[in-house]
Length: 96
Image (cartoon, rainbow, N blue to C red; front, top):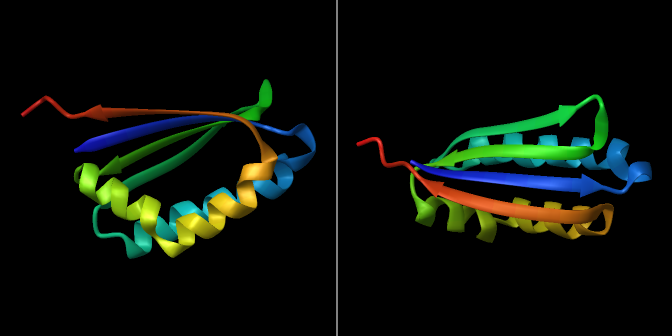
């Protein structure tokens, strides 16, 4: 498995618009991308502008397909102006 952890800081006035876009992106990824196995969206009530994603893909190629998908490109175009910072980390499963 290939894990992706993304942290965002969202413009305060845009959190209400950002989260539905992110939920739609996650749901579409899970429904349409065979290589997407998990797509969690997490927030902290004490830091409402911070959003954390935890995604699991079969491998890097599956994640690359996600990034190339029309639904991701649409999400990215709409969400980018709402984001003040974005940090992406990737991890390769070494348990096997």
